[in-house]
Length: 75
Image (cartoon, rainbow, N blue to C red; front, side, top):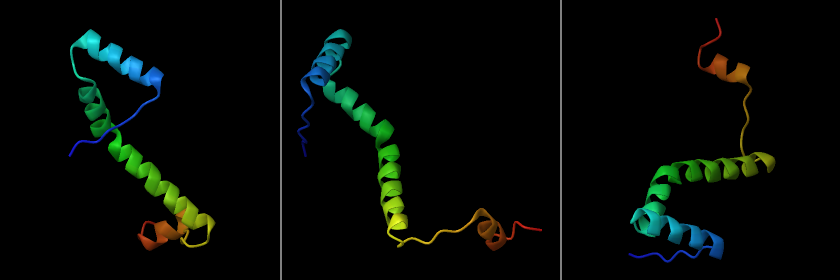
């Protein structure tokens, strides 16, 4: 399944230039970037959703002391 991605003109020009200079396709660079960074993006958006739930009082919060006690780390 092909996905069409549109970029601002300056980014498109930079990708074109990079592809010309290296002989690789623009899609090669985009694929590499996605593979390298998708996990970071997933983590970011999951964290933002959790933060929103915290702000709305829908997510429980625990202190470091509570977590240490629960894990049996306090002696």
